[in-house]
Image (spheres, rainbow, N blue to C red):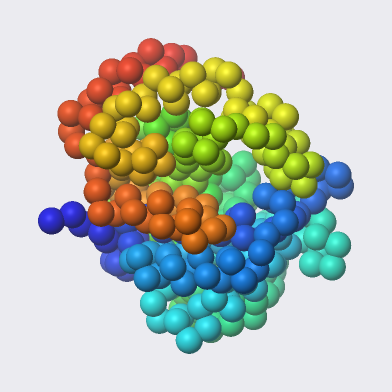
Length: 337
């Protein structure tokens, strides 16, 4: 029988093996003229999407104080009104925003801001506690991150958060945070069939941390929609005007080298009847017992496809091995500077 739940690391909290990422339902966010959101959204459809995700077995919902300058948390709070006991809520702090203008306001890694940001998140989410509170500043120097551990432990003691983590792609940072923080239970990091992070998964295994997989579908690249009918995104979509750190797309369409890699493994990912997205999620479930993919959804149809992967479970061993064979040259290539 397919296992549809996993533990949130050493917290022991049980969550759905696949969650729902809530960046997209936040709508527009800007850094000057640079879009940092996914364009305009229909809030009513977002609420329906959360409800459908719950019905399909999702319990883990990941958002952030800066997604849509707080709008994602507001919509999620609205959707979970009367349903809070069915959800494990994860949010993040570190990027202040102006809710009125939807503009990003830089970074803030101070302990005081961590507390203020949490109070705002609790208000918008309509809850008295957050289950997982995550430092969002992935490149923060380790000493400054460790300065926050005492405050985060205090918030646990106060009952305002249950556990905490760090959204970072650096294994050394994750290791230091896990060693210092008794209630550190998760690391959120970039992880997909196209971009493996074996070193981070090793840290998560060593310290019994949940590996929340950010970008499990490569921001839509690992979906049939993008592969079969690529269309340019609007100028209010982060994929349409991609910042330097986003290398999946050029001008809103998949970059050729990434599209070719998806085409290389598509048959192996879909051999047992899964869709491309479900195969990519199944690869993650097979990759490690610590992985928790959190694909973004902003429509009911997307929730149904993504969470439909729970019924299939991890990719079968032979299919997983075939994907690794097809991507062997990428797995062994030197890391980019």
